[in-house]
Length: 585
View 1 (cartoon, helix red, strand yellow):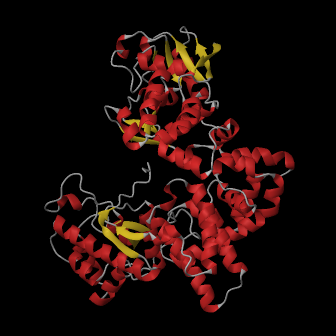
View 2: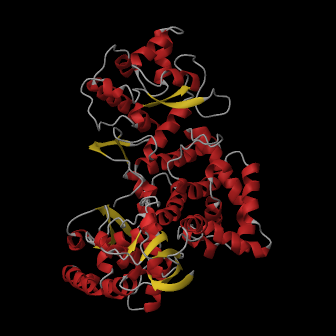
View 3: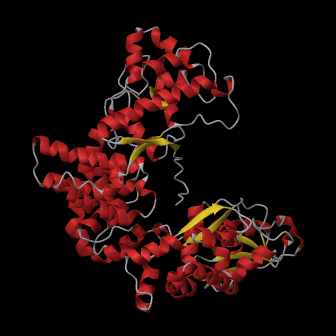
């Protein structure tokens, strides 16, 4: 076994060309786009991405195969090495440097320029540019993944999108920048003093490569692979803060555990410990950006604000649970649209409580807080550029507290969107599940109290038109969507087991064995299924048209409730697709 250091750029080229291949026993490509983006950010910054493990030669017993995105002639080449550990990183590298994957990756030049303007970067001062580049990371949404196109370069002038494959070739990069600057002459310094020198991937840092001799036994290869397999990911910000505080006699990991045991709500709010650290940062007047927590959290700030941060989060957990059905006192329930809202909203509630408001004044302040929460979900506000919005939204909220007419500008633009295509697990789906939970629903059959709160009977989510029933309806086509929030309700676990399949009319009929029609209809109404929609469910045979009629009726009930309760107006007829996995512009 020997070790060496090689350029990651050269290794990606070898993987693309077929000089590096994979053994058949390796699982396929499985990285999501967010991991590819994180790898790009590490390469740009020159951060270590972990060692790679190679086997010399092309071993027929391991059935060599090419990387996803490799050149069409790659299978015809004999491999110099088989990659035992490094498939995900090298495949991601192929997608970034050659743009041959199912997704292509682009620098969002408009986003980068916006960030530079907001920080008032003077491109002629190199130190300012270097500091900007250093502070930038993937959470700033400066890079995005798009469906593959034949000519990715065409996106540059039209949409300010610079494909990462152009960054890998200095000649192509300079030609592309010439075209861009010709169209946007005011961005010349931005392009030549920031993009070209600091985002080029023509050269990359070296990575450690461990090479195993070709004569190594197959059993040993398998054992080495299992033992040494790594991901190339860096330590999380929380783990870095742990290491920073430990020499100061602060065991952060243990203290987070203590807070979770001590609190009623905190455990459900902060799975990593980073929410507490963000709240501490904001209390200390620092920015809450997760990537910068190792720089902003020191022993003094942590010790000064940890208890206040914990208490503020606990108070917020109670508020969201009691007023918006967030169920943060129940384990394993995910009904908060964005965890990014916790830190700024905890400080906002602390501000309200610190003013000792009474009666209508306190009610008015809490209504503003609830409107902020609902508005952020409806507009999917915290899908990108999060940390800047956290600080700004908190400051705007304080102004709003002082003056009813100082409504945050972003909030005045929020409208209630169409709900037809929203999934149960997106921001709006989570919001609606919380609103149902807040209404203390009852099971249609037993009339027992259900939902996610102490004292409720065991509750499960249920598709009103079950997944297996939908394809049996006339007019239902393969690919039609039934897993949407408007087709979801809560049931007692016992009822859900019986109703997992079948016609909703049969379910209503079973409920009628225990209760009169008025009681059953009321139990459905509590879950935003009004009398007209309830009558649709009672129809003996159903078609796709019945399903569509039902979801339209339920959509209106939910929209009317949000409008009346939180003072938002309806949007137009355009639907918003709640796909949060890969945010767009």
